[in-house]
Length: 398
Image (cartoon, rainbow, N blue to C red; front, side, top):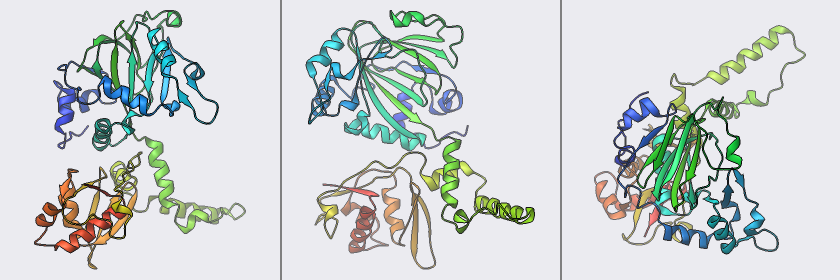
């Protein structure tokens, strides 16, 4: 695998002491990796008080809550009101289940907590695959989920307490799992048997069987799932790519002679292959934006006004998207961008604006204007930023 020269410092810290290049060449999509880390390595991501607040504010979203005990999901009706006007979680019943040994998982917490939103976006930007973060909390010594494998790459970040993890490889043939339905005694044969402590990281590749067991103390960890694009995603992109051609709606010459059918077949092949690069993978990512969609971003109230921007210079501009593919300024003076499967055409001066915002850091509008003053005047800077905002390519931070 090619090394990544743009490896960010946060990922180096996450994987320490394993270098990012070594992780990509030796472990990524291939084998598990356990990294012992300093106890405060993930402390800024989520705390118990922050989790309590999130649970209290999203009690109507019962679909996010999952309680499991020894490989069996508990009946939601045992801890939630699902009938009537508003579904809601019953905190007392949730807590009773947890006290008796259930594991709590909370789905897609990256949608609700800013540090985890930024972390998921950082994973998406680097690994170029859709990322979702779930939280798992346990108390007793009973496992929640059974021995299983996931259809995505998994990163476990231990936040608080300890938890025992067992990784069994890509096959469980010959491993006796019957006792798991009655006890939480893991079956023998694990390739890794390790107790994770705060600050530890465990990477588990897609399809690798694993089991987590609490050890009779409060424990809290994050699971980051990275869903890599696959061959079928490229095939779908190829079909969508040629869907706008006239040949897409042409009838097949089913009753024609063989010569006409062969001619039609050759035209189909030609349209399908026309314009494809040798590096089809990179072309797919550049054109389609991989397998995830940009997260929604709002800049209200300003984005809904005619001017779209606040008055004055007391605001910052931040690029929303992970990957912009800039084109060249055309002879007509237009500048083309591609992002997440869409193409945009802007005035040529947009090139300088995009270059200043490319690293994703928020930039004061005054500093942006000063940086490009030799090429674009202040009024044009505001106009170009408003154009980006209209397409939801930037956010306004006041």
